Image (cartoon, rainbow, N blue to C red; front, side, top):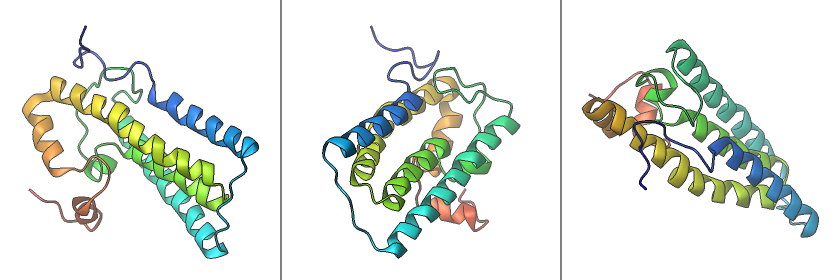
Length: 170
């Protein structure tokens, strides 16, 4: 039976649970087969900067949804199309922020398994979480969604930089 994406985007595997399971798997693998990155201090500092910046993107996305008075939970139907704030930079700023912050944690902690888990998680979130949410939004908002999706990257991209510089493509 096909999924009715107009009703809700995600069930199982639930994207927030995917983050938790990836973290648990990375830590467990680190105990079983320790694998350090041995990065210099400057690289680890970049990891901390990634964490801070990407958690700020995550928070900006959540706050944008709160201000729009729409649903934040990935297993519930979208109440409206939000195309401003963090959603003008990325169609999925909360996933992008959390995923890149997860990778930054691996770099900052010199933990190869967390970095590898973040890469696998990015692929899974893209294919499962983001793709399903895109299909849900397309089913609910049709042409309005198509216009938004055509100008806003799923992750981040050149058009994201234009938005951050105050220029918006039309």
